[in-house]
Length: 169
Image (cartoon, rainbow, N blue to C red):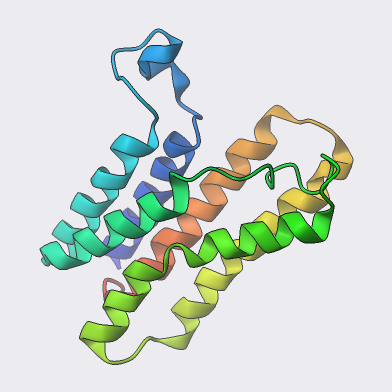
């Protein structure tokens, strides 16, 4: 259970870091680290979950999934339909982005022969976090909205992956 809490917390912070919420430590914002936050968050999550699961292949699958999910960008879908593309197109794009995390879930299914349904449903709950963002666009620009979204989505991914890799026992 402690491993699941660690995974959930680390993923929440890493997802926020990958989304640029801790800009002062990146060189482009005056900090020491070059590049985007995702280049550090992806390997850190792979190493963390690999260590928690005591399996380097888990770490590799998580790192690949996290990088596939974050690196390509949002294709203007993060505006929740307010940018003229339409909310349905943006929701479809965000849903497809969630599927980029399949390498980690695929590895779990291959090695464990089954996925616990509740954790698969938690992965789907990430879409609910995006729906929250879409609905929240009606409130106008709030500085905490993206931070809340990044932390929520990261925590849901962390809990989902902790479950599928057996870190909740």
